[in-house]
Length: 121
Image 1 (cartoon, helix red, strand yellow):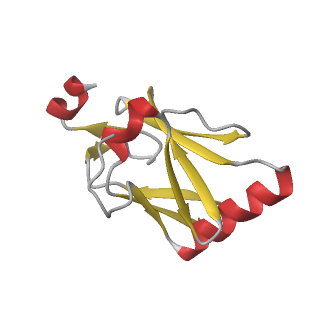
Image 2 (cartoon, rainbow, N blue to C red):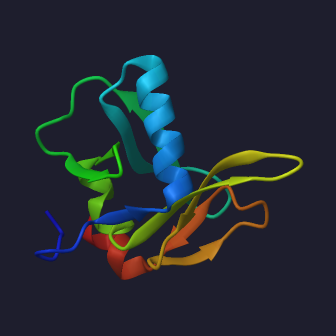
Image 3 (cartoon, helix red, strand yellow):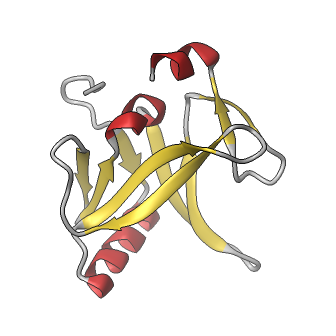
């Protein structure tokens, strides 16, 4: 929907693609749907859920065996985002490097987008 011909809406690091493929295989899912919802101290939060059947309006990104679906409402917020998977001593999880984010809360769990982008949704 909000794409540029020849450019994927989001990209995945090799670690993220490997983890998403692992999750797809272990659960027998078609992929992961990513999106955004209102919430958190900065105003918006990322969402991730298993998908067994893609929605016809999802943007589908496939990379190195991993499949991510982008929910229609989230496509303009996530365009240009790199998804990474990080493992540290205390935690592990997906990290989003999103050029559309203008602010984030201190704990990193919620984000804020430019007001003009948020008004377009």
